[in-house]
Length: 319
Image (cartoon, rainbow, N blue to C red):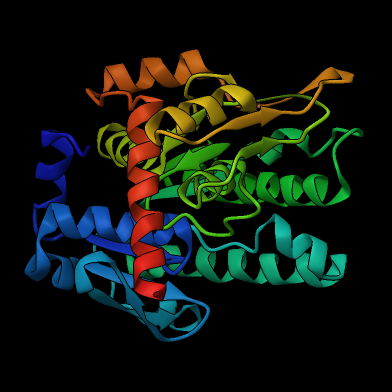
């Protein structure tokens, strides 16, 4: 998925890659991509991981990576670096936490990372934002979605101000719906939930009383595009893009999953509410960016197989 040009850029040798939020879905998928691209020795030299606490992160194939506490990020020696910033308390935490505590926790992460950028030599940042940023002012959105979206938008603005002030590069991905290895919170995401039902031999139930339209892309595709944009952008540039994919109603997603697993059935509840739930980004702009950077678009059938393989492995490991 990573193009020859970005592979060459990563392998220059003096470019350190700092990953925050390394233990989350996006973080683990990114570490796997970097490990595959760099090889074990270069990965150990070039990649540094941070998260809420020190821990050993398990990757597929028995590989592991050591994560350091985010509180230590400012102690890194100055060196030309990219920061891949994925540390953030997500929407589910906005439901569980008091709003003031949720805001304080995310603000603390943001300020800690921003405060370290210049001192440790960061000249480019890839920031994982969310499509929820578009819902920050949407009165029809759930309160936790508005809060999460507002804080993601504030985070974008803080990092953009740093990039413009420091003449550094910032790439922001507003991520909507993604697939692939290391997917978590399986019951919270329709894609994973449908796959688990099909793998267990259950009928895939699409219960939403309205049309629900989503567009999916694999997380590795977003990582490849983000790194490619970082490598090609000029200092001081702030680049924003939405994740894309092919818009599909959830019944179509369920049918595509059933097609990959012979015998799986689909039941779509009646649609009784006229207003559709549509949540995806600018799919045409995303497709154009992929093409411009030589990154092939991943069909939904391949996304299903990749995610299904990962979920099967999890089940086998648990057994």
